[in-house]
Image (cartoon, rainbow, N blue to C red; front, side):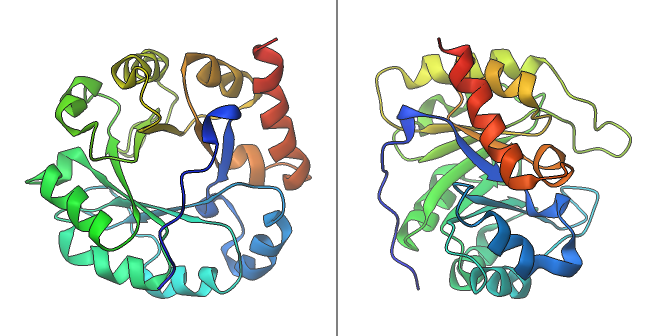
Length: 231
């Protein structure tokens, strides 16, 4: 099992986490090799068909991806009752595991289990869930995942309310170094700059990276967009 990662200096610049579901799943190893030296994390969405209306990858695929990249694996569990699955995904190679606040009977207990497994603990929020529900979790969560698109079928459009949620999360964090703020969905050159200005630290980019002719160049362009916004 991989050791728990150190925090590092995440606040100095935005980190880009390409979402593997937007890539060509028939060529995962090649994709991982392609972006290994450019991306900061690799984002992996796990859906159970219940909490999120789709089925995606499981521990075996994550284990295969783990063998193909040195990037930290950021696993986003969009599943009901995630606790029994935590050891499976940690053993498969997950460095960071985010569960949904809406799916946990006891978020404090679930986050504690993730930390005991040696992974970074993350809590994710649907678009319509207020950031204020996290006030009692700020000292035990390593990162917050703010969704900017709906999970429901036919409602995948970008929701601008996510900008205010990021600003609110940054205000709740105050002077703490944690939790980091990760934004998942709707990332483009324009929104990347706006989310960084609002307080985002990690941007999960799917089609903005893998839909580009040159995914590596797209990663660097997303970073440049936020750098220019801070000048």
